[in-house]
Length: 506
Image 1 (cartoon, rainbow, N blue to C red):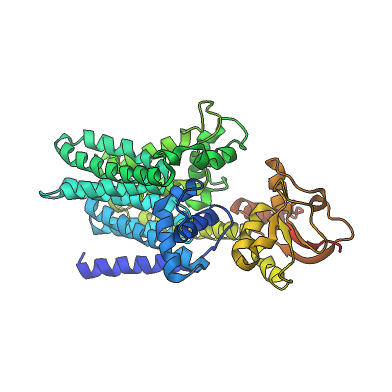
Image 2: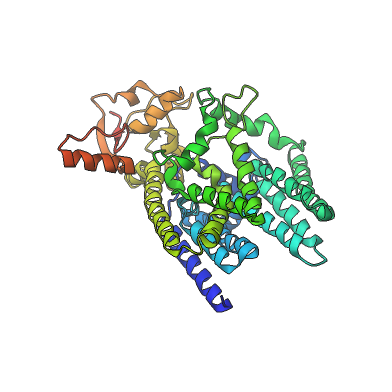
């Protein structure tokens, strides 16, 4: 394939990938993204002492602070950071594939990654999982270049160490790549000097972080102190104890009926086929990619919060598998390009099937993401028309979002779950969202009786209905019910639930 053709195909993949990501911009959700934004604002304001683990993840909050300084405090300016990381991931998928098997493999890997719903949705969402995946891929690419380059090659290994250190400063679970690099080093004993330089680069970043924290707080291990980890541990202890969480990731990767399967669109089936083919054919690159995603997947699946082994170290959301997407698509692309090279019809059929599942999964994930913030976004213009002295009382998620959407009123927007929060005063506005009320009750938070059952004297100001989305299973069941003439069953709790904005009687 000529250079012009390669650049044309790669440019087309980048354009399609960017178009998908920009058109499906999700905006703030009111969860971790607001914590990262607050940390970036703290850096800009000179408030550098970490208040939680969000403030120690510099791989995201430093570029976020730079983006907010250069382009303003809006949602779109913040989204430039994950969007940039996502596009860099597409380029790295191409570069890794091309280095291992040629331009066709690189282009196939980049095309698959451009369509994976998790990457499309995550490209405008403020989380550390996408940046971590990109920094992992950059680390592996630099290691590969160091192994393949003619001397001097030490700079590639040292760069890999710096990138690995940056990945660690982006999210602590980056250390799960360490066993992969160690196994790779043991298989290349002649490269021990190079891997020593990798360890030196990593140690330099870690030492700089320890010195920075010691200067700020007096303790180099402040990032592991209760002051930083307390909030995370408290949230994890709200989960019911058990051991089923160890199968969460396999469930969302393999079970089409699982709620998070759509984020991956069945890519893991192509990954398993690629691994089986690569091991049978003795493909060294596929074996290395299998270690790259297999070992972290195992660690992520079984890492416990404490020695009781009854709760995971972190929530098993689909997005926490984002660091594995690039080795996923590389393994799948190796089989599609190499294993099915003599069966073009089967390859085309599998490609179209994946694209169709990816389209449905992206649509569903986008609707799900927007549903969380839909109530706050539709109520914000209503609140904005009220006098500036009006107090707004809501659940924690809606409170945080309204504060972000209406920064001039943030001091007058309070959460009813705070222990010191008084009952809603006269003429206040109260958001009663049954979905979030049920969530707060499940975790044992305080919900005032007047919020659970609004008094008759309260006046309804606005009513918001969440967008309804039926799953593929639900669509199939509805079609069968219609064909057989059966009555439609009721929808799941909270689906299309109505949130009401009340005014307290004066």
